Length: 474
Image (tube, rainbow, N blue to C red; front, side, top):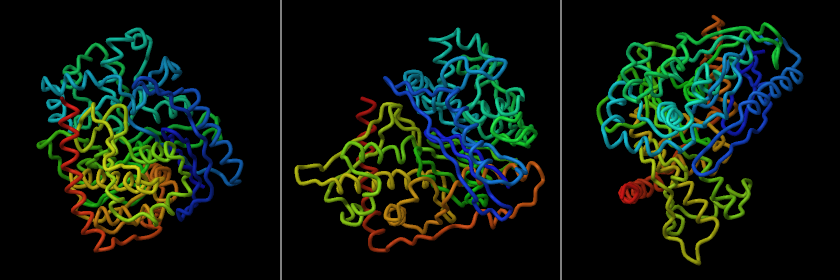
């Protein structure tokens, strides 16, 4: 069997697949997030313990030898480790907002744009550049103690294998990697005032690093490949590799990705270009800050259970009786397809006659409009695949197809873990049939009448968003 490990923000998963790509078993374990005053952190030991726990359970459940494992996980943030790969402090999550004032300053003085023009990366508070700069100002001793500033999957790889600190071109894409040379841009490091911390940036392994397991969770000696991180891994797992084709990941983060062979560093700085394992091929990524997390907040606030969502969507008409939601709930604002650290969610059109169904549908519609905005900015011209936790709701998938006005290739299961295995297979020279591994579960067609109405609603969404952005800057 082949094992894919996906170290998510809130859930760690391990999935087993056979040679034809059939998913044999999945083990999952939740991990905590500490949120306070815009600071979002994770306990690295808890995360690593969840990894070894799900791997141990998976290998016990499926009594077959492990050919190899592919590793993926959440991107961005700062995971500081010492020489032995042990945590120096809690991991700063990609959702962290403490560096928003630095991003505001860099937006005003031109640093933000200068970095984008060099790397194709539009910084946001939770990416490594601002976080490292913030730590350098406020917690310099933590950086003094650290051997490396890694990403989530890199910490797990080091602990599982005992290898030295390393990352790959996909994770390094934000914000220090030159997408042409696939190496760090030292001028960007200088622009962010981090030249004296340059040694914390882990060596970039191109192609991804491999090593054998030390025997924690997986049998000793099991080959493991480190990367790519979750966004490009999902693209691989959904079969999105041809230029113009796209992927929408409806998860905690609402991520829009479009495969491309063109690098355009002009226009409004937003999103990023993710380098892939094929030089000259990128993913134009617009990873919005909040996806299912926005709906989860509305559900918990209104007391609606997840298993009630489809019924409420079915009973509530398009337009949600005039209720509108701008779904920008993240404490660090928004990062795609624009960067607005102070942007916050807005609910309008609510009155005493508004129902829970109105609030739920309006939130789902708002997330759909945000997705449409991101996909347009990313340059979608071909087919669109969709994956993530949101695909478990058939009613939401129908709504998304209508809002986006295009068919959706729904890819279910552990798509990130599947992509991690396919990336590892390429690295290890295994002849897996990627087309068979990435076959869609279903195709959801839009309803022409509802799609036309939502095209008008999308124009209204953009108008409301422009006003909200202006208020955020006031």
